[in-house]
Image (cartoon, rainbow, N blue to C red):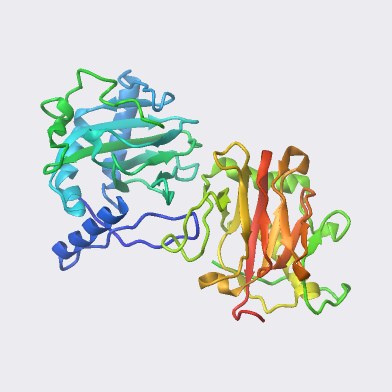
Length: 446
């Protein structure tokens, strides 16, 4: 039943947890590796865990249960319908028991299942689970694919984002690893949770969750659930115009606003259109460092923001075209670097004042080791109306270590060499959106 595939590292906060490799000739060695990964990380991802046809059957079963009035709401997710210990889902629990046990290196005892039909606006707050959920798995059975996959996050320190498509399953230490989901922006999603305990562990007495057998309701408690404790690359082909700008031997900060190069700025309507991308997508926690999940980390004390990646597509082509055109002209007349490409997606950055740690980014430079070594130009487009927030200024140390504030006008552009120190001051009220990208050249310092 468990058909594991290899994994790829994604860019920055758009990442997945470690995925297990296929067992080809040495199943024992494979399971030892996945078990070690599970012990070290607290979670494991299995691809193609359940065939699509079976997923579709269980989705239909869930909708049938809703029509029959058998789904209930709980305090954890009051907008959605759920069911505890349904016979079909508990049969799935028993069917997965041995396979999941092999992957995590433990003999497992099944406790219970809990399936939900998520509805718009639902949010799964940060939490850890009760003892009956010592080893848990969440399996995506189906969702309205008019919206992006609804991510789940693991680990309060690393804040690992995982996108589980239909038939994909995440195993995690339910009592140890904090997990959560942001507000749901889709129309519906069916998810089933499979809970186990270690047959040789401290919670082995929680087998069947006190029911005596699988597939029957739990007599006490809120459907068997305790209330939560707390809950690449795009190449440039810009049009080069005759030189009109003053020649600068040592390029520094360059701005574009209503006073200078206004024809290259973003209009109010364009800014709002870009911001609207966040309404239909799930952002990830901004990270620091570069080179993928294992070399990047989350530290809200250093950087607190939400990032939405804007990939090249038919719908976003106009944004990419405009950014590339602006950069090509700026480089021709101002920077004069050897530039070649953008390494990854455009980043839509969202700074919020109502976070536990308000949005900000401490002093840093964009150039560094790894893939950032070839960054030449840092680009920021101001998308928010400056009257809608306070604080959150882009500050730059230009030549001579002189600190100054970048333009704040909506639609304005800031460009500067990636080696220049800069920061985003803490936001005091409201919220701010910005579009950010780094322009690379194949050879550094040229």
